[in-house]
Structure formats: C-alpha cells, structure tokens
Image 1 (cartoon, rainbow, N blue to C red):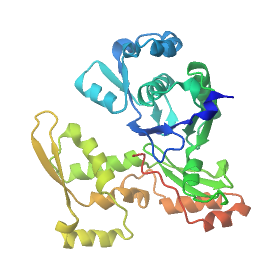
Image 2 (cartoon, rainbow, N blue to C red; image 1 turned 180 degrees about the vertical axis):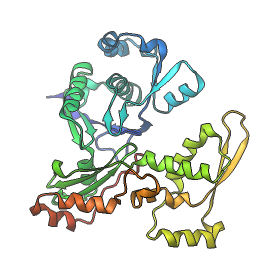
Image 3 (cartoon, rainbow, N blue to C red; image 1 turned 90 degrees about the horizontal axis):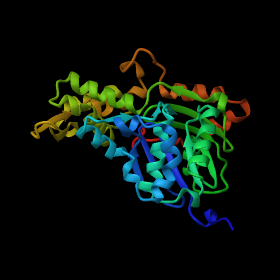
Image 4 (cartoon, rainbow, N blue to C red; image 1 turned 45 degrees about the vertical axis):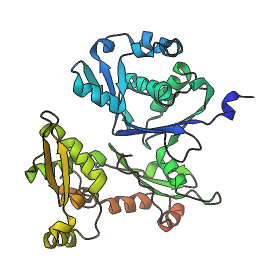
Length: 339
C-alpha cells in the first residue's frame, strides 16, 4: 500500500502577495505568509546546482540553518534589520518569474513550516488561469526531481474557489469566478468543472493597485505617515477598513454630513524614532475598491468597469453555456490577494 495514500495531502496555494499552505481536510490553512524570499548576498553567489542537489540531505543532517535565506514575514524583517539581505518576489502578476527563489520558497514551506517529509505526502499546488504549459512542466520537474514527491496535482485556483463555494456534491460546477489577487485579476468562466480558456478575461487592476491608490489618496491629503511606512499602512487600511458602495455620490454625502461616524483613526509608531503618530482614514475607505468599478479614477490606461468585463467574458463563451453562466449568482472572489 502506498504510504502517502494514508496521509493527508499537502496543499500550497502560491499567490503574488501571499501563500496559503496546509493539509487537505483542514478547515483553514496552517500558515499564511507573504510570497517573498530574503537571500544573503553571499548565498546568492553559490551555484544553484550544489544547493539544489543537497537540500534534502542537508535537512536530514540537521544543517538547514546553513542555508542563509528566509521567507515570509521573517524575510521582510531580515531585510529591514540587515542590508546584507536582498528581497526577491518570485511570483509577479500571478506568474513565476524567479524559479530559483521559488524552489527555495517551497523548500522552506515544506521543511520549516509544514515540517513534513515530501516523500510521504501527495501535493496539490495552484496556478493562475493563464499560466503557460511550460511553467506547469517546470513545477512538476522541481517537485518530482528535487523534493521526490510521490504524486502531484496542479489545479487552476479559480476552479478550486468555485468548488469551495458549493455545499452539495450533486451540483454542476458552473459559474464565473472573479479572481482578484494581489498582482493579477482574472474573470474565469467555468462550465461543468472545466475552464473555458478562450473566454478568460484579464483585468490590469489588482489588490496591489488598490493599496497604491489608498496610499496615493492619503499622501495627497497630507496625512502624517512616515514615508517608509506608508505602503504598509495603506495595505492595512485596505484590509481592515475598505468597503464597496452602491452609489459613490451618496457615499461622499454621507461622509460629509457625518464625518465622525465614518472617519476612522489609524495609530502607529514611526519605525526610525519610535514616536507615535495618528492619521484619519476617510474617503479612501470606499474609493480604494472603487477602482474596479470606475477604473478611470486610478489610471487612464484601463477604463472598463468590472461588471462590463464579466458580461464580455460570458458573451465570448460558447452559446450553449451562456444561460448557465448568467444564471449562477455565486461568484467566488479572492480577497485582493490578502489572507
């Protein structure tokens, strides 16, 4: 009997902003970490072949600490405290751009976070809807040859999001998935569990753009935020306070009439001096997400609202699937690439 069949499969969902990892059967991920790698400059000069060939052996020998790199929040912390570490974001706009860093990232996920032997578990990984076949082949090569996994399945994350929204096994896996990640947004039509690849629409506005827009709004209003901390504050404001509104004009009026009811306060500590500071969070609460419905307020390069993109996506699908795609009211939406 295959020993891996009796153990839960490892599930790793790699996104541009965050990676969620855990085991099949769990209600929620075991870990959610930023998809970033901090590498020591001296480690960068080592040959890739020598490090790749010895990873599993080094781990078994208990000398993993010699591999001088970190991932996730630990990587961000190291880069702030030491100038010898450089940050690498292996996934950009939903696609793997740096395979060396991606290998190291997976290695830390498996050994240091999940603490499992990859040879004893099947693996489920996710990929973006428009990922090239060569990328999937390279992922399989790394998983089988470097980590010696016994089995691997690579799923389109939009299909998994749609499947997670259903509560019965008798349903038809049909619907339109609006997958808003940190670096990429896709509108994906799914019919009976299969992605209609020719009808996938890509939107050049994603979670990071919302963060940058919130940052821009707060900067233009002259809020007292340290420059080195402004992006992180904008990201937390987006996650904690932003919401969508049905009528932007009415929302402006509500904020103007009762500012005390709708304005929030953000309090932080300046990284360099340790002094406390505070700032108001006002219109950006609803203007941030509004970039999906009125993208011209953020950029002139793209002006098609998200509902129009969804309609075009369904209209470009085969005619015999359109009625079912329009009928389904459930749309699975990733939370802008955030946990």
